[in-house]
Image (tube, rainbow, N blue to C red; front, side, top):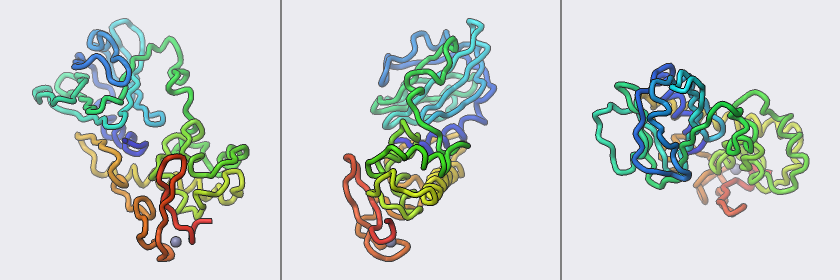
Length: 278
Ligand SMILES: [Zn+2]
């Protein structure tokens, strides 16, 4: 599944190519992904301009203006389990799972989604975008100002469960998937089993910093390889990161040499070093 860094890399790859460009149409080759696709998408956006591409959690937000109805709107896009976006020339024939094209004259933004768990939704700006039901439930952005040790310490106060599933709760903080939770906890020396509200302010500082560092290096690693092809296959390993603990069960810890352990937490695998993480 594409994680926050992959979605951010997609955004960084698409933005310079498409921002400010006018849309000449759209082609939909299915009626729905996870939700029904917007009806008459081509008509709605024809002649409009893509003003900006933003990200909220794992959603890409395409802000549209100069639309035929004289209003502004947004497209909300989620890559689901297997979605990917690429920019192609209009003469490239679509493949079986290429469900949507948004056409910008001589460039096409093409959405491929074999498992169809992705989403593409139209949002009229009559209501604030951040109040959209899919977005309103999202927690703080870990790469933006405001997310730090003090914030974390304050918000872990009432959390009595183990830290790792809490860290992965997108209602609290978005985008800390399984890999990034494991790596951040290792980097900060905190056991995934430690009760969330029993982590000191100092250790929360270290944890928040580790989360930011882990996600930023994943974005940087992906960003360096992105040009006109924007790729998100997700799931497979560490997204070009050198993982210290993730999927390294039994391998020697990079700090102490003792074996990495694998346990189950909230239905997910957790990898950690019992010697280095307390
Ligand atoms: Zn260790």
